[in-house]
Image (tube, rainbow over all chains, first blue to last red; front, side, top):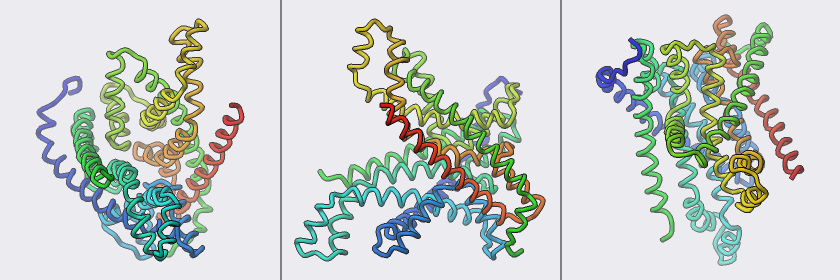
Length: 219
Length: 218
C-alpha cells in the first residue's frame, strides 16, 4: 500500500480535483471582488474628515486583522443562525473571506494613497481644483500605480486562504484532497495533485498581476 | 437561541486551557520558524548547488500551497510512513516550517543588506568563511529583520487556529468543544475572537519592546 508512488491513482482522481479547483477559483474571485469593495470603503472611512468614520475604519481593520480568519468564518456560518443569519457554506465563505481580506486591502490602499507626494495635492489645489477633483484626478491615478503590486500580494495570499473553507465542508480543492487522503491513504499523491493545481492558479494570477502592473506604469 | 454570554462562565476553564495551548503553540512554532528561517537563508545564499536546490524547491512548494493542505500532509503523511507524531508536535512543525520559508526570504534580504565591508574585515582578521557567516553577518542581519519577522509571528498566531483541524486542542478547538456541549456557537466564537485579539495585542506589545531594545543595543 505504501512505498510505491501511485500515478495511476492521481490520474484517476484528477477530474474531481479539477472540478473542486473551479470552486476554489470561484470563491477566490468573488471574495477578492468583495474585498476590493470593502477595502475601498475602509480606505474612504480611514481617510475621511469625520472622526467617527475614521474610528470605524480603524476598528474594522484592527478587529479583522487581529483575529483569525477561521474564527470569523465559524462565527458567521455557525453563529449567524443564532441571530437570524442563515447562509449556505459557499456564501458564508465568500462573505467571511471577502470582509477579512478587505481589512488587509484597506491598509494596502491607504498606504498607496498616503504615499503620493503631498505636493501633488497642494499643486492641484493651488491650480483651483476642488478637494474631490484633486483627489480623483490627481492623487488617485498615481496611487493606483502604487497599489497594483501590493494588492496582488493580498490576492495571492487570498487564494491560499480559501483553503480554510474546507473546515465548513465546502468541496473545494483542500477539502477534496483531505477527503481523498482519508479514503486512499495516499497523502503525498493527493498533496502533490492539489499543490500543483494551487501553484498553477497562483502562477496564472501572478502573470496577470505583472501584466496589469506593467500596463499601469508610466512609459 | 438568543445570544446569552453568561454561558461562557461555565466553560471558562476550557477556554483558558485552549488559550494556554495557543500561546504555547505560537511560541514553539515561532522559534522553529526563526531557527529554520535562518538555516534556509544561509543555505540559499551560501550552500553548494546540490544542497541549495532541494531547499529552494521545498521553499517554493511551501510558499505556493495553503498551510491547511500542508498540515494535512504532515499529519497524515507522516503516519503513512510510520512516524506517529503527537498532534501538537505535527502542528508546531507544520506551522513553524511554513513561516520559516517566509522568514528565510526576509533574512536573505537582511543578509544581503549587511555591508560587504563587514565580511571583508572579518576575513582579514582571520575568521573562516563559516565563522564570518555565523558570528558577523547573520547576527547583524537578524537584528535588522526583527520588525518584519515580528509581523510574520503575528500572522503565525492567527494561523495557529488552523491546527485545530488536525486535533490540537488549542483555542479554536477548545471553543468547538465547549460548543459541542452548550450548543452556543455565537457566544464561544465571539469569546475566542476576543481572546485571540487580546493575545495579539500582547504579542504586539512584546514585539515593540524587543524592537526598542535591539535598536538601543546598536
